[in-house]
Image 1 (spheres, rainbow, N blue to C red):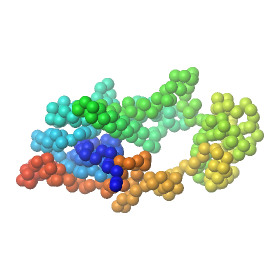
Image 2 (image 1 turned 120 degrees about the horizontal axis):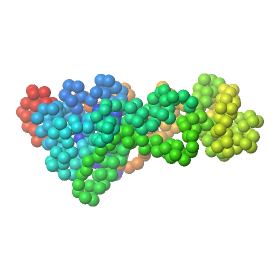
Image 3 (image 1 turned 60 degrees about the vertical axis):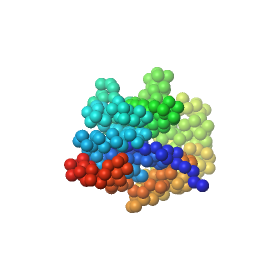
Image 4 (image 1 turned 180 degrees about the horizontal axis):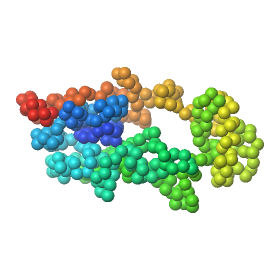
Length: 383
């Protein structure tokens, strides 16, 4: 007998666009929740047109309903849906939902058990609450960008993965799950103010500990360490070498057979990192003498942390990721599986994302609207 899905029976109203909110509700969908994605009529989620590949990745398994929340009839329809919902996730700027008459206090009066998560760039309070932003801006405020770029240069480049946006997604899901557990004990829902900036700041936390504990600490102390970094091989491929601990350094030194690296004064990390500018070029020149496959083999045989630097063109062929069943095949696109194999979660059951408004009639009918009422809403452009 198949295990029931962890969140089966949980209904989520998803009023989010682009990445942070949809990524969070996609995880809830993988866990079995019913996701009703509420989009603007005709336009929908901005990612549909601007980032269609991203849209497909984070909106599978969701129903699509179009609803104009600026119209009184649209607001009324939302209130009907809220009565039967467990969770609402919205991603508007602070104050927007209140102006629409769909803020937490209003919806709480309709459904005291609703868990209402507002996902915004800087949160509902503070001097930046009304400032527009994106992942780049949140990373800037949280200190992430200050740790990017050349070890000795300014923060001149962004992060290739939207770590701020996704941090907000993870904290949204974690907080919602905790709120669901608390509701089982108290019978009450609650309001969740998710700041993407605050979320990614927690990832900087370990670095803040080092900065306070080490006088003169800078990003160079993180990004420039002998034997720890990305190295080019003879065949113009790249390996990620992670000989950071002393015992791994000792094994790396043995493999490289460069006499100066074996000097006792470099046995301890704190001492060799001080002269990374001297030692690391020796390592880089040595790595250039052999091919990628040769280095992977010999370093693995000697238990030195090393992996291939995989690019987005070849990642679907990576044997480790394939062995972990991380890839799912859709209609013309490959998706990612839920990363933790467990009972109660099934990302593979989703099809491709629904067309805009494909489920509007069915969802409104289930909420008590008669066919003629739905037709009237269509005529007015509410749906």
